[in-house]
Image (cartoon, rainbow, N blue to C red):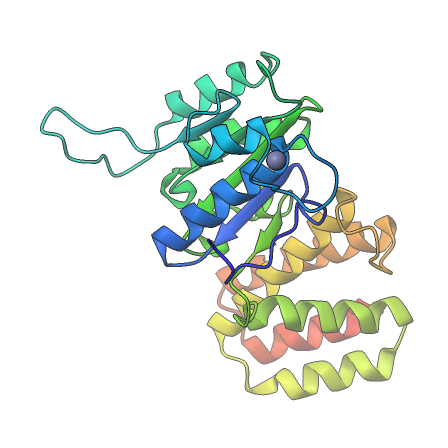
Length: 260
Ligand SMILES: [Zn+2]
């Protein structure tokens, strides 16, 4: 069905992002994961044999709700998922599932939510009812707000690499966690060829990683909450500098000095 994604329900959290430009692929992966969430059997899920899985396969499971963009009077699909649709989901999420143990929302085209809609979903993603699961489908995870991303496990097709920004942010954080001052300085010396856009990407990746630490999502991070708060503040200052057109080299210098 969707073997390009290696998604197991066990790795999934209450909120997941399935990110790929291929719409068919992400929809298939989302439905498969939804079936896994409602599957009644133990062991490898979805079993595709139990009553819940069968209903899911026929897209008739009342506890799997797909939310997609509405169509206008002319039958054309609207550009955005509306904030009203998200608000409706938020209140519906507090109604218990009908027959499955879980209630799953598949948000198709999650990337088409404007920031008002994303913010309307945020609190629910932070503190959902225990039975609720959310699967956000998007062309790329980066089309969603960092606050949303930091609450989700992100699935990309096998073999597709994460954006290099997050990799760089993770490498940097592991150096900070070790208190490796020399390593941090070497890291920024290597980054000297970075342009403004790359630096902005790095700062965004850093913010997402730190938010994950603070929301307890990234429990295996060696970064303490205290350090995360401090680095978030440092990152914000760097972003302020960027807005003031301070040179990239100066900002890298500042980051180097304040990191450890
Ligand atoms: Zn099943």
